[in-house]
Image (tube, rainbow, N blue to C red):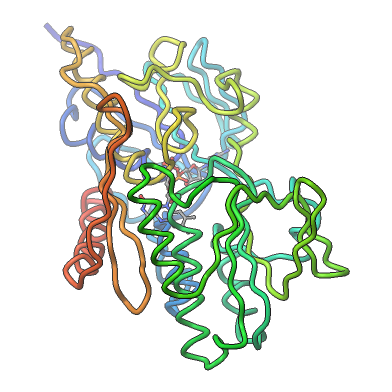
Length: 380
Ligand SMILES: Cc1cc2nc3c(=O)[nH]c(=O)nc-3n(C[C@H](O)[C@H](O)[C@H](O)COP(=O)(O)OP(=O)(O)OC[C@H]3O[C@@H](n4cnc5c(N)ncnc54)[C@H](O)[C@@H]3O)c2cc1C
């Protein structure tokens, strides 16, 4: 019996979209054809922003062009998604439209810089590529004083990243001989850093303390006053700064918000197989509203589950596993040392996580992690 080839449309060629396209290309090449849509011309790993900021990397050098994508059965289209109708799986872009048999929303999270008044004028950030470039260029002009790193909202991508930024800033200031006249503080709404488990938080608190970096718990900066160089907290308290680095407020892209897929700001899915309430419409990655960390490794893992669910359903079989929200995230501890957090958010009654390392071996593993993804996703 000949079955019609299903058209899978994947919106977003980031961690989740690329992993899913490569899985479908590998395992279901005869049963599906994939259209992969992204507004950008290339993919950049989240952690490459730290390389741009501190490692002297050029943004163009760490971007992997989608032109390199050579996966059988996958067609890449550089277009901006302008409307999604999940009821009929119809997608409109700035260049055309698509009818999907199976639709996957993997459009990630955006930054709402304007949601924190004064941030655009008075602060720096390294969560975007252009922000990392601007901050890299601004840092040499800082000659010591008060550095305030503010986590401006939750959830945000890669829970350790504000602390990685603090460790690496510390290193840079030591190297430049200005650390002794520089105060570094991290202000965040969480009761403790990386609050997946108390042990993981304690490890971060210990690492911060060892470098003389203060953690201000349950401290939310809501506004910057660039005229006085003060950060304004929820209760009106003002914290002075000479250099403010913010982790911006995150939100889903507007096109997702307008699609009717969200509840409380994020896309609702079945935690087992990542399907939205709309039949044959899945969502993976940062765009999803599961209460767990947002990171590429989790987006990748979710994409694997969606690939398995699509295969199982095409064969009329049940999905043999559930999404567990597990993954290993590498952390820059400074001085070239890399550790990792092994986490599992949904597999048991409570999240489990532990910090491994740092070690030289893990620094090598992080490089292998990136190169294996590049080979798997882009093929050739
Ligand atoms: C500083 C920093 C360090 C990080 N370090 C790590 C780390 O060590 N490990 C880790 O696992 N994660 C890390 N992350 C997080 C990681 O980058 C993200 O969680 C991950 O990229 C999420 O994958 P995703 O597929 O959901 O979204 P993304 O990878 O963000 O992909 C979404 C894609 O959708 C596209 N898109 C959005 N809107 C539209 C539209 N309207 N039309 C067309 N295309 C659109 C975007 O161009 C983008 O390519 C880090 C993030 C930062 C900022």
